Image (cartoon, helix red, strand yellow):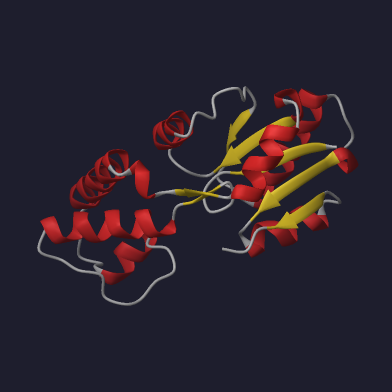
Length: 172
């Protein structure tokens, strides 16, 4: 079995740091979170503040990324999946994420998870999920039934299952 681990909120629990980072960035512009939210995203900020310019949104995201980089110690690792990484050969593991590549690199480096060569950055759209399955099958020279995805996003899980791959849901 080849293991494909989502990074954000699956291998690492990042919601708390992500939300703190957005709240910090918003506060620098005199703004605040307008409603409780499981995970603040650019889309959420745009819904809260539709009059923000593109330049202001870019600034918010950059300030958020800086905050995250300076506070990586606030991220917790999924101990069960970390144990899996210890037990399984790195050549049998792929990582995938929709997150910013530079942020992911920092998180992996900070947690000394550096032996993994198969990292796929995906927008996790239906088309890209299908492409990701194909690419992981090529990388591992396997059939899709030999892949097991670990994922927290219910929509992604459902679509992966429709594609006939095994999925283990990670509950945050």
